[in-house]
Length: 150
Image (cartoon, rainbow, N blue to C red; front, side, top):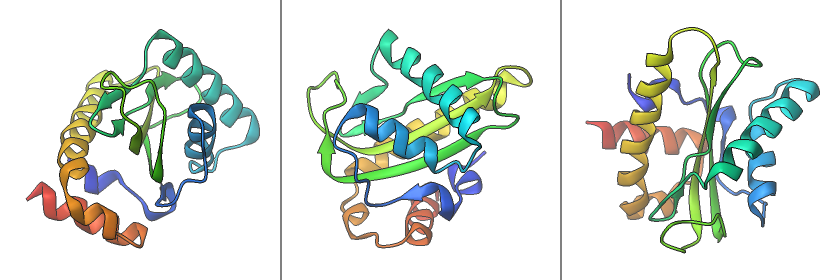
C-alpha cells in the first residue's frame, strides 16, 4: 500500500497554526472531520499514547499514532509547521512534518502496520527533500509523495 493512495487533500494542512504539542494534536485530529465526541475520544487516546513516549522519530518528523474503537478504517492526516514544534524529539530538534495515524482497534492489524511502515518510509525521504518547503497545496503535497514513491 502506497501512502499516496490513502492521502486526501482535505486531511492535509500545510500551515499548522499550533505552537505546542497539544495544539498540534488537536489541529491534526480536527482534519479528520469527525463528530465532537469522536474527536475528544481520539485526542484522549492519542494523548495517553504520547505520555508513554514521544512519537517523534527525529529529523523533524513525528508520527503520532494509535488504535481506537472510534474509527472503522485507517485514517491519516498530515500537517506541516513552518516554524516547527517542540515535540520532545529524541534528537531534541523541532518537528516540522507530522503524520497522524488512527486505526481500528479490531480488524486487520496488518493494515495498520503497513500504513505505519509506508508513512515512516515516506516521512524520512520527505523530511530531507527541499521541495517540501515549496509545496503550496495539498494536491502538490500528494504529487510530491507520488514522485518520491517511484
